Image 1 (cartoon, rainbow, N blue to C red):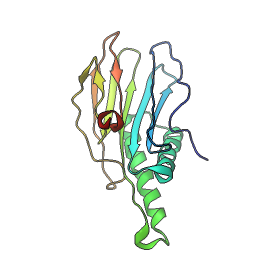
Image 2 (tube, rainbow, N blue to C red):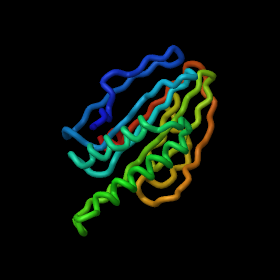
Image 3 (cartoon, rainbow, N blue to C red):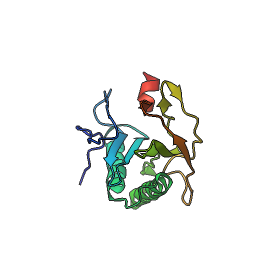
Image 4 (cartoon, rainbow, N blue to C red):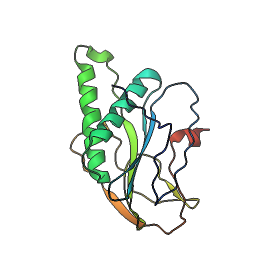
Length: 176
């Protein structure tokens, strides 16, 4: 089952106003994002980019989105740990029977949970930091997903104010 890595419709939530823009340069690729409203009124935002281009990158992005949608935890660091494990498992499965021709993949990924009171918990696996009201947020960037196993991603907490605008982006914005 392939999961849509870029939602065509954003979820509604009375606590947040969401907007998105996605302009792919070359058909399919490895960019993905998900905005998932949670039972407690919080919003889980996950943004990432799988290495490579084309169908293989899109398939790996779909694998990560599927794993995210099946993840029971809503803790950003735990989610990144799980996605790292999934991507490493997908890479090891690709190598079986392919010899040295297997293409290993890694991904950048940022996961944030934003609560109705403005508390934001965020973890970063080598992705670009978000912007808050036009200024880049300072985050530690842990290793990309799919690089090594048994990594524990760190997370940070921020307090957002009513009316703060967050921008999550991929490297396509920087490259353009």
